Length: 459
Image (cartoon, rainbow, N blue to C red; front, side, top):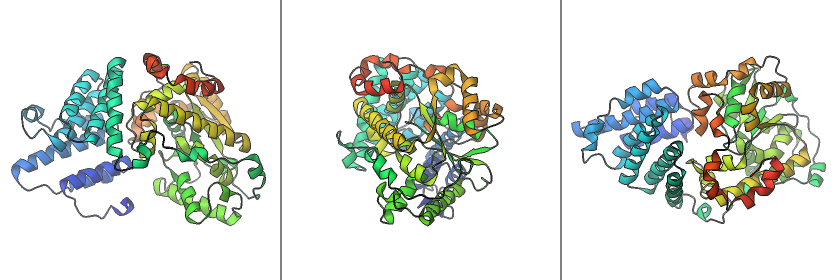
């Protein structure tokens, strides 16, 4: 729908704010600002003032999301907070938009206590489950930054409860605690099935994308920005284009993954052509540069990757499973399937194990060319691992890879929750963060223990 949004006429205020927000999540910042600039105001002085404040709050968040903090501060300065605090208008959508902007700017300036106060104010005044969820997620994150885990845990549990309540009307089947949030984990190809595949011509490694995979919050964005900082590579932010190809197959009556067996050379070429067309919408000037396709859960689509790009280089990002789970648990994911997966630590732990069980089963069959990129080791021996990465991808000059933080700061919009961290360099504070929450993890350690051992981590 939104591919045709550019010529849409100006929108009424609430519609403009909603449209700008959705465009922003797609990485279309310029169009988001254009929508806000053209917003139709209510038409009377009092209402127009409130509208102007809400627009300033949204612009503040857009600038903050693009790491343009000076511009974000300037927008925030347009809002008369003292007057709003004493006004009956500081309710509903108005207070939600404006309080959110102020809390987020507090976070970016390191004032986590201030952020906690604003998130709490939002939570106290929230009118809907979605508003309460947003405020509680922010509050939990601020309390975590303040090293108050005993207070952060009740806040994050409230956040998930409110998020599930809002999702009950969007994805009711996923809200059930026993629902399978990631049905792809059940899709495997046996060795016997793989042996029956017809042989197809395929691109060489240097003509194939570099796939960066791993469970979300395992360091995939950091690695993506490292590669994007090199002049020979281009990343396209996080896109689900491999999953779009799965849908194309299903729509054509070819079930996935069984339909991969009889795929013809022409059908494979057409699928690669569709993929290239999707990429071109984001990176029209890719040229001879190598594409970096970073989507963590592409690890569940290994059969498709190996059918179309059997010589592709794949980098599997790893991080201590408990740190991964804690990071996921504290984030308000937009995807209903992943939001429900993260709603409790036991459900998230089971999902984590299922994802890796599927990955290892398919990797044993296909034997892809994989480099394991372990976050803790990268933090401790950065230069050594940059050299390993350069060797794996046959990069002659690895120096640009080391300047990824500077590159990320200049890039602007980065869609994933790590958009702040990757501008700051390697973060040693993220290692063993879960220890502060060990008591909460005790019930899920038995679920994780087999995978902890397989991945070489200790509980």
